[in-house]
Each structure stands twice: as C-alpha cells, then as structure tokens.
Length: 98
Image (cartoon, rainbow, N blue to C red):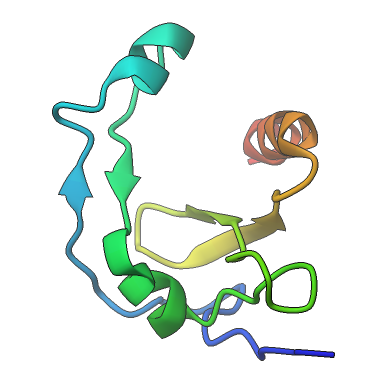
C-alpha cells in the first residue's frame, strides 16, 4: 500500500507555485460557467510538491481541492477523486460557515 504524507496541511501556507491557466482549454470552464480560472499542473510538479497522495494504490494521480483564505492559509482540504459532486456541497457548506 502506498501512503504519501501531505506536505500541505490545514492551517498552513502552502508553497508558492506557477501554473499555466486554461487558455485554449476553456470547454470545462465555459460549460459549467465557472467564475474562476482553472490551472493545469502538467507534469504533476505541484501535485508532488504539495504532497497530494495517489489513489488506487498509486495507479491514479490524486486529486484534492484546497480552499485558501485571503491570507493564503489553507482552510479546507478535500479529496475529490471519486465523489466530485460531494466536493461542491462540502465546499459550499464550508464557505457559508465563514
């Protein structure tokens, strides 16, 4: 079993990163009318730096959502590889509680 300890934790400021935005790949953003920019982590560099764990015994790259406050501190970490719909509900509940 492969276990990866997360390098980014709730209450901490994650390491800085630079990623390309979704220019030229806007179908997802337009389809769902997302009011924010999507970023692409080609090569999984940020995923590795942030310590995102793999899924299915390391066969799939992990997927996590991070909600940061205005000071850049992580307030919520949600693993949403297999239940993306639940992510929306959990994130909205969290944001409404602020």
